Length: 107
Image (cartoon, rainbow, N blue to C red; front, side, top):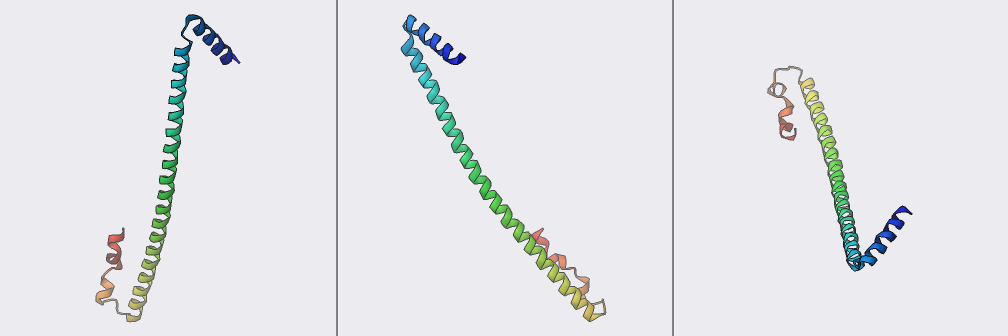
């Protein structure tokens, strides 16, 4: 209510001084600028939301790939352990070579 009274007084004062058209033009420009700013902010928010969604999908994919790689590594380590266990000597070349070199590029 206070703003309405202020606007009415402002409008009446402008009319009395012959500046009402300039005041209306100024207020219309301010409104348009505020509207444009709001639309820009909405577009920016939508773009950021789309980028966030895309990044979340990439993160999920990478986590799945990492889990898969860990599973394969466990399987490989288990197979190497089985081979070494069956050989029983512990002096073969394959026992001395660690399996981690196979996945060193994945770290």
